[in-house]
Image 1: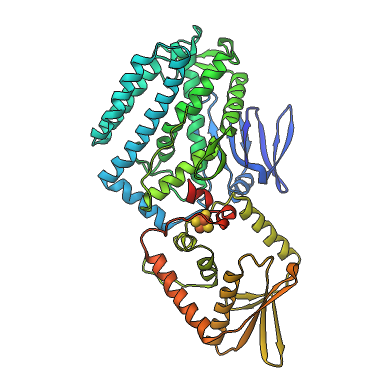
Image 2: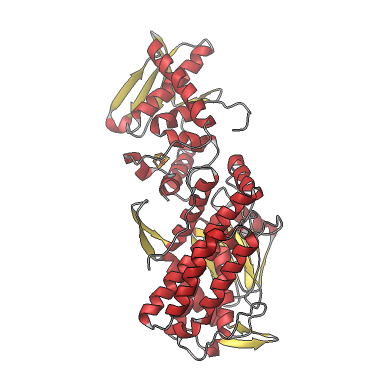
Length: 330
Length: 168
Ligand code: SF4
């Protein structure tokens, strides 16, 4: 499996022969191009057109994050897998309101049912969550009655609200109270962690979409806006609770990240590099964890599960098999 | 399926005898996973053998490894790594022989499996031609079908780059 390379230092990216080369004040590093799947750039990095051409030729995506750790954008090389048939089907399912809702509903249902698994796990461990669990169950049951996107979005918002409100019970860390969801900029430590994790998730799903025949600009739950990526936001919903949130609970539980790893910046709170590094390491480890897959017949990593999810969506679009989201078993 | 002309070539004939589902997927340009180890290995060996300047002889879009003449006429030969997909290889070669015959070139075929010290002769009989034309029709039928033939788990799925697509 190709690697995700995270660049935190400031420096220069260059092409050197058949390798990628990163040079900063502290280090000089060669990265064999065949091993690299994507680059996540956090530092102040300069690169030239020759480098982009090389990355493009080798089908490497480059994701950029701002100084504050926000996702800025991606260098998404020219599509290398193209199937006219798939694109037509993808657009057809977007344009047909019924079909669009059917897919969007599966994304919301997947997200909700994975949230439920996380809640169930913590309810068994620390208790005090059963009330929320019941409410989440009720909303899940009501999803079939949501016949337009806005009601679906409202249901999902409702679940998320209830879910976040029990984060304090789950983390049991008074330094990281949830308070309320704040995004740009996140106004407390926990929100900063959530935003950071979510943006990583969006880029990872985007990278996986690049390796399929799907067009990332056509989403179903998140309205298609042909200038921006949205399909990755849809799919990420399913994985955020079981990947990002679990990493958050784990780094806080093990005190791998503490309040000292943050600093105030203007209106918001931002993570220091050390915390970001810790977080991406834990996330990477999570994505490499394998679980058994019945159909494939061997263990597959979470990262691969994301790809399989896209394949399932493709099979739905070509009319082969109704898409059912991945639900974690615990 | 868009109504541009579909050219059933040797590659599709090959896949037809390996897996019919693969024919549909290939026909719709739903290409297999490029990260798959077998695909990577295949690409690697293709590059390697170009490096050694394999003597290939091209006829239009067909490429043969060896062409020779004996007292009965022209023989085109294909070198294969193993006889695992012998049926596919045989039909693909027969297809090329048929295409050559359409151009007025009569030839016989030979499949060589040097590792297994094995050789298989392919002669274009009427029966073989019938089979080929039937396969061609069936390939078009498959591709024009709006959904792919259902996946069936078989031995070759294990090494197929579509496996994760089919079994996800
Ligand atoms: S995995 Fe099996 S069913 Fe699917 S295309 Fe390959 S050989 Fe055919």
